Length: 149
Image 1 (cartoon, one colour):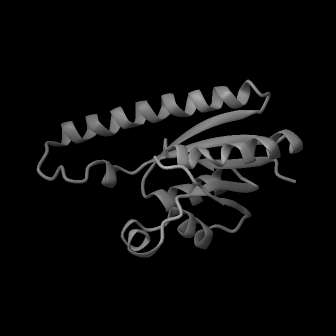
Image 2: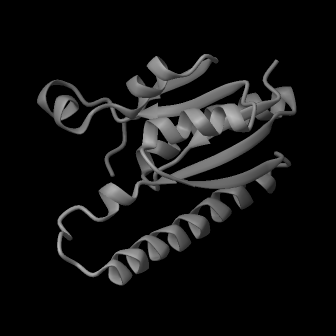
């Protein structure tokens, strides 16, 4: 039923809470898993107004390299469990990038852990999960993560 599962990860333990569920589905369905990290240049550079362009670019490149290493490590864990896994790095606004990746990769399912914010923190930080839910036209597996990180 799910040939391709897109899993957005942000490097947090909370986001990784979805991986156990994804493993079960991928093993049962022989699904391909795509681990995605979105580098949002705007949020990467918050508070750095007036910093020269070369410094900003260097910070984004460092974040990208770190994200690539992180994704490869997580992919290695899934591959060790005989799950076909690849990694993708995208740049831009997070919700939009997740939706675009889902379409480009022809994902049958997007699996994401919600940080479970409520009240003012949700209003201030927004909700990636809610944004993805409103934007995509495919199934979404959403769990509320319990860890802090």
